[in-house]
Each structure stands twice: as C-alpha cells, then as structure tokens.
Amino acid sequence: MDLDRRPDAAMLEGAVIAYAEAVACYLLVEKQGRVIPRRARDGAGNWVVVGMVAHPAVRQRNQALLIMRAFCSEFGLSPISRTRLSVEPADDEEDDLFKLLSQPRTNRRVFPEGV
Image 1: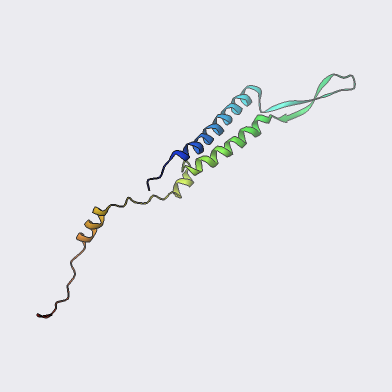
Image 2: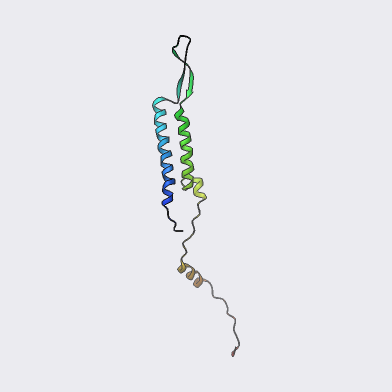
C-alpha cells in the first residue's frame, strides 16, 4: 500500500492547530482563573459583581481538545484507534515461492507407460 501521503498533511495540520488552540486557552485560564465575575449595573449605575461564571476559554479549550482527539484518532494516535489499524503485508513473490517450496511433498499420480 504505497499511497501518496500529501493529503495527510492538511489533516495533521488540523490536529496541530487544534492543539495550539487548546494550549492557548489553557494558558489563559491558568492566568485568569476557571471562573470570572459576572457584573451588572446597580441602581446608581455602578458595576457590581452579581455572580461567577465559567471562563469562556474553558469551553473553547474543551472543544479544541475534542477536535484534536478526532484528528489523532484518524492517525492511529490513541490506544483504541491503534487496535483498529490493519496493515496489509507487502506482496512479496519470493515469500510465496518460499511457502510453496516449504510445503511437504505430495504423492503424484503415476501414469502407466505410453500415456
């Protein structure tokens, strides 16, 4: 199976981009925290904290990791996807000849003389 692998480059690039996005989101969450304050204006027009919400980068990171996982699965880069890989043996005519010659001899039919 000697196929051109250039089309694989775009797929691999997608996995790398998803990984870069996941790392960028991870670093942002590490710097700013997993939750951020939700603010609203009070009656006097001042901003006040009214609650906490999950950082948007957490969701983006999780989505990027799912995308990266899907790409990596296509390349057999996870334990379960490696079990689904099948590699066809190379078609080697010498091996076929060796197998034929290695078989036990069989009795050949003996023809009467003159036939």
